[in-house]
Length: 605
Image (cartoon, rainbow, N blue to C red):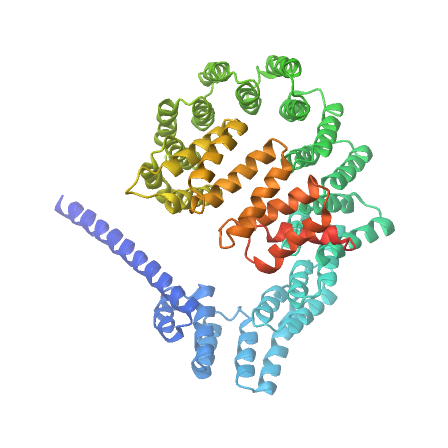
């Protein structure tokens, strides 16, 4: 019995020792990598040496240690390291490239050339070695040598797929035409590489259709489509048009593809959703109508067809304003729910119906009753949380703050650490802000500024700055209370009341820090009421009298869009976008402003 007990103790001791050792190695690796990134190579060497001894197969430890020696110009130690690694792992023939490069760093070009030739000799013996040797040349910035390696291998074995490796090198060299052509050659051979090619090409494609890379890629695709018609080129053209938010052209490609080969409509649906989000309702309606007209009569297609019908109803609702028309939309919603309510994947339909009842008809109680009615049949805790969130939002809309706060808090408790829980915490902060409980709102926002969701983190930071910049702990904060009330009225779509409330703020707190926030939010409300000249006046006032405002680039972009889309003044629009390009190079609007500027200027696309 004692011996068994002793063995158990020894076993536990070994496990604990192993755990401590692994933990220690992990910490050492993290510290070594930190020194390496900072350029503190001597310190990194002291840590990488034992790490490599303990883990000789770790290529990252070897490469980083080698780079450290070379950075401090200890080429002798670097050579010893490579030779030891080659002795231990003779099959790692790429190490001959490392030996050659080490000699090159010492200006021993003849010796470097000998080792490079030796490495290429292995490729001639076995073309499959091209990948490890080509990668080593590429990592050491010997790009032409890497291309030579792949060329030698391809000559010996034409079936080798070296296109991706070669394309990446041409991309690094800036020869994008060769890069794109290699990607297209790869798809020409095997269409299974679509996602790989799209992933790599996306690094060089922007949402600006006038960008030279976009133009080049499009022209290469059109050239191939003319000389060698193939569905692959239409699919890639559709993908390109979607990247640059030219949804109408993307839809033309998808319709053409479907008519030639009826089948999957998922890309048509995606175009519909993206164009709807971008407020291109004509294209969205066209896409969803096409999907509904070409549906298949089987259960597998229930959800996409249901969503298409839902979005068509949303688009129809955008054009209806009077009570009679809205009543017709309500009836159509109820017909859709009756038609699809028996299926599980209808949550978005129910949420959209609740939004319509609340924000379009002011029937918040009916919306809450409907959502509470379906909540009991939802099995997924996450989906139940989504429904609870919508109910809480409607309660805020109805000024029932305390009940809303209880629901938001319940979501945080039920779905801990999820993105939905973080969103609920933000809405607790926002609701507290609406109530005028600014300090409690700030406490919630402090946590959210490091949220894993960038969108939530940005919203939290924006609200936190708004409160922090206008909060005075030694006063009753009447200006901030009025401003928060105006934002609540805007949330409730009571834009005229919001404007009137903001007028009080602007009169009582003229020249104070809150003035630019009030002017900007009032401009948003004017825009919602289609009072574009009033919105323009507010935005220009901020630019003229608050030149240091954090909202300056927001004002410039909003003015640019306003002049272009609503006031038919492209010259002024161009001026606003140009100011963002030259005065705010780190603005979140930079890419969109550049694209809009080029389009107005009439650049060749």
